[in-house]
Length: 200
Image 1 (cartoon, rainbow, N blue to C red):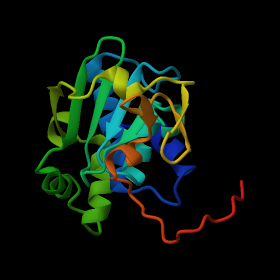
Image 2 (cartoon, rainbow, N blue to C red):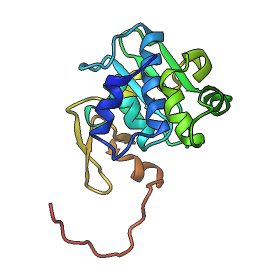
Image 3 (spheres, one colour):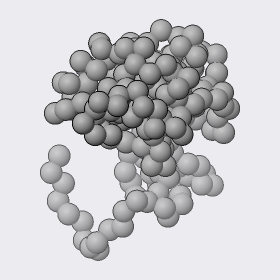
């Protein structure tokens, strides 16, 4: 399976093409095939959850049409080159990741390549999906409604006063608060007691 059109689109996003981008494209295309959905999508029928960020995620996005800016791509950063694609119409979901032997198979398929990186870059573009990837149907633990949120919904956190979008607020008693205030689990902590000036 060659993926020339998608790889050309990636050239506009990255200085060079790399094996992880190719894996992202192949995983996105395989997900669409397994779910029997045309891709890339211009609507929001597909929701994709990638398990690492970076160039791999861009490859998945180019193949599926799912992007963070369109709210159809989410990152659960497990540090894994893997993605779960969900057909939001049927609820069917499939998780796909590289076959454990993919690097060995790439080298065997491209013995004249100058190194492993170049062997992977080339072989990942055309190896049969059954040799390149592993997949399984999965069921989401979080409902689609919760993952997709409520576009246009706006609330104000009763604790910090910041705006909360897309129905992501958490009910605490009669109040609505943002998730960091509800759990105390923000990815950041304030470094000063005083407020910095707002620039935007």
